[in-house]
Amino acid sequence: MKITGIFTVLLLTVLQSSYALNLIETPSLASSVMSGNLLPIQRRIPDRPRIVEFQNGFTRGEHGGELRLLMGKQKDIRQMTIYGYARLVGYNTELELVADILEDFEVEDGRVFTLYLRKGHRWSDGHPFTSEDFRYYWEDVANNAELAKGGPPKKLLVDGEVPLVEFLNDYTVRYSWSKANPDFLAALAGPRPLYIYKPAHYLRLFHRRYQSEERIAQLVEENNARNWMSVHFNRDRPYKSTNPDLPTLQPWYNSTYPPSERFIFKRNPFYHRIDHSGRQLPYIDRVAINIASGKLIPAKTGADESDLQARYLRMDNYTFLKQAEKRNPFEVRLWKIGKGAHVALLPNQNNSDEVLVSLIRDRRFRRALSLAINRFEINQVVYFGLAREGNNTVLPDSPLYRPEYRNNWAQFDIQQANALLDELGLDRRDDRGVRIMSDGRPLEIMIQTAGESTERTDILELIHDSWLQAGVKLYSIPSTREVFRNRIFAGDAMMSIWSGLENGLPTADTSPAELAPTAKYQYQWPKWGQYYESSGQSGEKPQTPQVQELVELVKLWRRSADYAERERIWHRMLEINSEEIYSIGIVNSVQHPVVVNKFLRNVPRVGFYNIEPGAYFGIYRPDTFWFAEERR
Image 1 (spheres, rainbow, N blue to C red):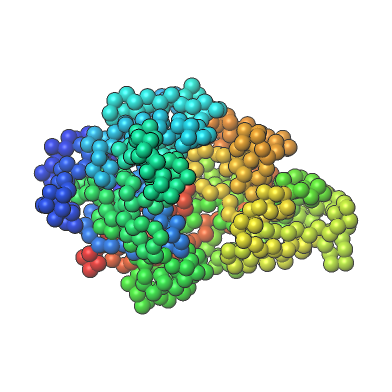
Image 2 (cartoon, one colour):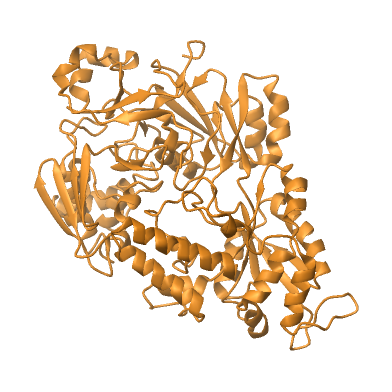
C-alpha cells in the first residue's frame, strides 16, 4: 500500500563532525545564540539526527513564518501533539513503522524490544534525553502506587503480564515479555501515543520521592491541590499540551497558559530532525491557534483566517469554500477519509428489548436491513457521487482488501430483503405496510443519533424510504453525544448511526481489535466489549459462536509473532464481519475538504485525512511544511 509521500527518511550513520560545517543556524534563533542564551545548532541536535530527504516533487524549505490554525475548543490544542507526530517510532507514508525519536530499535521473537536513543538528543529546554527519562516513568510513575493506582497501563500488559524493563546504559532501554506483544510498537506510534518516558529532571520537582515533606506541602498549598499526586498530574500532560513549562520532544511547544483564545506554539530549538542541507526542522517558526465557535470555523476559513484547515470542515462546506477560493489566497483540496465506513448503522446486540434483540442477533435480519439500503442513491444525493458504496471494512488501499468484504450483502435488493424478513416469520403487516413482530408490535426501529450533523439525518431520511419498502419503519432519535452514548451503554438503544472502523488502512501488523468486541465504545456490542475490556469484571460475556470466535482470534493475533499467521487471522475476521454484518456500512472514502494557503509548500495535493493511522496531517510531517517568501 502506498499513500502519497512527502519524503524518504534516511537514518544515516555518519558522525556529526562529518557534516557540521554544513549546518545552517535557524534565523529566528540566531540572536539567542549570539547572546549566549542558546546553544549553537551544532550542539542542539543529536549526534546522529534524523535526516530528511525529499522526493515526489516536494522540496527543501526555508525557515520562518507563522502558521495559523482555527480550533473550536481550548482542549483542541492537543491536536498539535497529533499533527507534530514526533514519536519513538512512527509510521512513514507507506505505513511502515520506522525509528523517529529513537535512532533505531530491534525486535526479537515479537516479545523483546531494544530501544536505542540518539546520543546528544535534548528536551526542548536543553536537558539531555536519556534512559533516565524511561526509568523515571517506569519506576516513579507507572509503578508508583499513589500516581498509578491501577499499576502500569493495560497497553503494557500481555495477558496480565507486566514487562521486564531494563536500562542497559544511558542510551539503551529494553522492554521484554515472555509472550509476543504485537501491539507495543503500534501503541508508541499512535496519534495519542503510549508515553513510556517522562522529563525526569522537571517532574522530579513535584514528586514526593525527590522532595522534602515541607516542599511537597508547600506545592500542594500553592496549587490549591488535594495532594501531591494532583500537582504532579497537572504538570505532566504531554498529550494535552496545557503546561507550557513541561519539556517536550515535539517540533513546537505551547508557550501560552490556558485559559486563552489564542495559543502560540514556538519552535523547539532542540528538535531531532534536520533536512539534507543542514537546516534544523521545523521550517515554520510559530503556530498560532485561534479559538472560535466550531460552527463559525467554515466561515472564518473562507475569510482567510487559517492557513491549513480541515478540522471542523465537512463536505457540505465545499461549495462555499470553492467560491471563497476565488477571492482569497488559498486552495481547497480534497483528501479521502480513511475510515472503514464514513457512516454506518450499528444494531445494538446488547439491546434490552428481548424480542428485538433476538432479531438483531439473527444475521438474516441484519442482512435484510443492509440489502434494503439504496447506497447508490445516498452517494449521489449526499456526496455528489464522490464516495464509495459498500460495507464497513478495510479500504482498497489496504493490502488486506478483498472486493467481497466490501460487497457482501451491500447491493440494493428489496426482493431479497423481503424474502429474508419473511423467512424470519415477519410475514404479517399492519395497514401501513409495517411488519408485525412476534409480540404483536410493529417493526419500528429507533436509530439514535448524536445530533451533531445534518449529514447523518439526511442519510436516515433516505434509508427510511427504502426500509419502508421492506416493511421496516425507521425513526431518528437525536440527542447530545453524552445521552447518545448512555442510551447505548444501558441497552436502551436499538440501533445507532456512527462511523465505522477507525482505521480502514491496516496491515497484518495492525491490531484487528476493532473487528471484535474489545471495548465499551463499540456501539454494536458495548456490553460484550466492556466484558473483554474489564477482563470479565463488568459487562456481559458474548453469546453467539461467531462473536466468540472473533474474540479468540484477537487473542491469537496478539500471541503471534508470525506475519503470515497474523494475515490469516485478519482475513478470517474480515470474512466473518462481511458475512455477519455486525455493522451496516453505507459509504466510505468520502472526500474531506482541506484548505491550504497558496504560499504554504510541501502539503500533499491528495492524501488520507484520518486519525488512525495517519494522525491527520502528522504522517505527512508538518515540520517540513514551509512558506514561500511572500509569507515568511
